[in-house]
Amino acid sequence: GAVVSQHPSWVICKSGTSVKIECRSLDFQATTMFWYRQFPKQSLMLMATSNEGSKATYEQGVEKDKFLINHASLTLSTLTVTSAHPEDSSFYICSARVPTDLAKNIQYFGAGTRLSVL
Amino acid sequence: SQQGEEDPQALSIQEGENATMNCSYKTSINNLQWYRQNSGRGLVHLILIRSNEREKHSGRLRVTLDTSKKSSSLLITASRAADTASYFCATDTTGTASKLTFGTGTRLQVTL
Image (cartoon, rainbow over all chains, first blue to last red; front, side, top):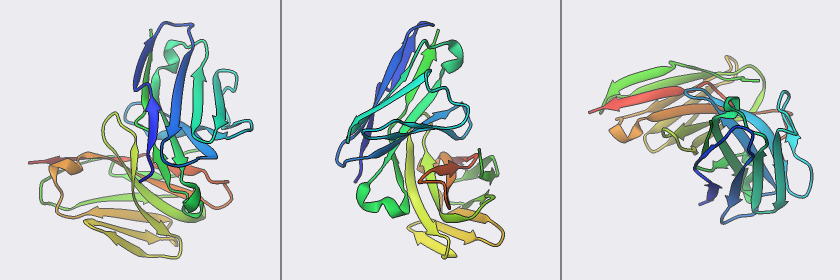
C-alpha cells in the first residue's frame, strides 16, 4: 500500500526559531502533496498544496512567508515554520495521492508532527 | 472553508453495538470519503462512495450517500474496542482542483 512518512513526529522549539517538517512518499512518486493543520479535537484545515517543481498553492489566510513549502523531488515535500511563535503550536499533517489513482483523489497521510513552541 | 458537518460530535457505545455517524455537505461532489484518525496520528482512508452511488460496503462498514439531501452516513457494525477513533468525512468537490474538504469529525468511543 501507499506509505507516507512524516518526520519529526514531535518537536519542541523556542519562540523565534524555525522548524522544518519533512513529508516523504516511500513507495510511490507524488507530484502533489498537501499540508494540513489540526487543532485539538477539531478537523483538518488545508494550508497549502505542494507541487513538485513549482510554487505551492496556499489557502486563503495562510501566510506564505510564515509557512514555507518546498517540493524539490517527487518523493519529498518540506514545510518550514519560520520564526515560530506559541500560536503556531499545532498538529501538522501531510498527505499525498497515488499517481495511478488520481481520479479517486484518495489521500494517504503521514503520521503527523506535533509542534510545541515555547 | 469547512464544508462538512458531522453528527454526533461524540459517540460512546459498547462493544458489539453498531455505530452510526452522519455527514452533511453543501456543494456538488465527485465523491465522498470516510477517514479514520487514531488519537495523535494521521488519517487512514476507509471507504469511498461516488456521487452516482447510493450505498457501499466494505467489511463491517456501510456507507450511504443521498445527494439530494447532501448527506452521507457511516455505519460500523459489531463495533470493537479497536474501532475507538475519530471519523471524518471528506468531500471531493467539483471544481476544486483535487482538494478534499474534511468534516468536523465524530469521536467514537467503544467500551468493553
